[in-house]
Image (cartoon, rainbow, N blue to C red; front, top):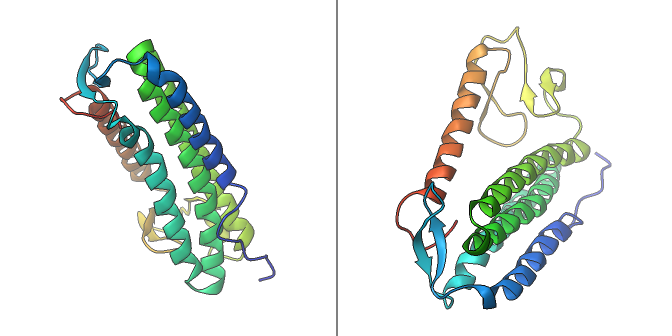
Length: 219
């Protein structure tokens, strides 16, 4: 393997820096216009049902993106200590996911902050942008893994380097070719039903966390 070993930090972290900087500027500019306590949780009708004091607001706004960046940085550190080729590939993949996910999460938290002034439109925009950047993060994570570890097991049966499709394999769940765990064989119709169920479940959890229940934060 002749690919250069990626450093702990990379160009992808510029996306995280841009997202957090934009969130900070947005927070500073918006804070004087917000009431105290700030409505940070809304029901499906757009009416506030949870509030956070301005004293605690920085923790609500900045904790999730910063912690996400730190957790994925830790994953990269752990990956770098693994076997040479696998560790290099996973480190590069986590860098891409780390930067784009942090940017998307920063945008989402900024949208939550703006809900007090602009209502549900701000939140819906934030959710769309977040999932776009989450998807981009996963795509570029796979791309970086392919660049740093192109010679992997059974490459002919993977689409876009991510989805396993092998009609000659009777298994529904197969071991991942990189890392640990399992992935679906998309030559089996049940794989699509399972994937759809997962997306519906995640979407429902996001919807419920943002629209129901008296909580103190918009996360």
